[in-house]
Length: 221
Image (cartoon, rainbow, N blue to C red; front, side, top):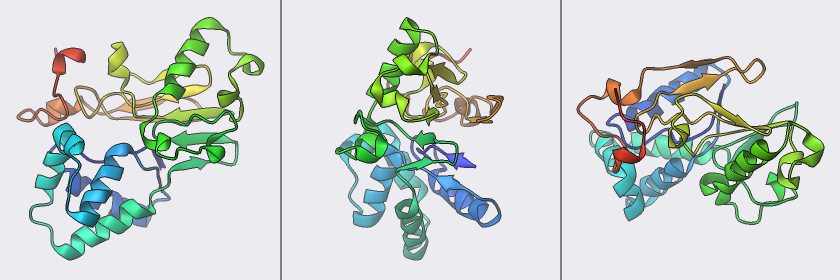
């Protein structure tokens, strides 16, 4: 199982999610890619100082979830965050990362490594490419040509009023907005069959998640 990041923030059980993932990795082969919210949480676990932008976008709920955790438990979680990968390339040359990269020479040549966690231009490029041409890899922008397929998260599909994974060019976006008003999604990368949870906001009915401005997102019916 390959996870694309942002395991924490917004909802009240972030620390408990990390506990679950650590236990899961003991019995299943898991690859954990790091997201920008994980990067912020890792910094907080290391320094006990949270970035203001992080605290305002779900980080405070994560801090609260660690309230009853011991120093030893927090150190165990810190090691887990440090162990996460910035990206993963499988044996079929499929790339998995949280956000994106900007180098035309591929992800391994990226000079600004924070793009692995924060970039949205990869997805925006794929959207424009998918709108203009058929799926002919030889005319893709150079950034997209290096990999058979690219799987990302970071930019919720609910921004486009979709609750399902989106495909543009050879990029698959499977962030369906679980941090906001959408479900959590898992996809079979070979068949593209996918499964989804209930909307996460329905699982935490008395919380707002990262919905600082819910009117920008799909509203719960």
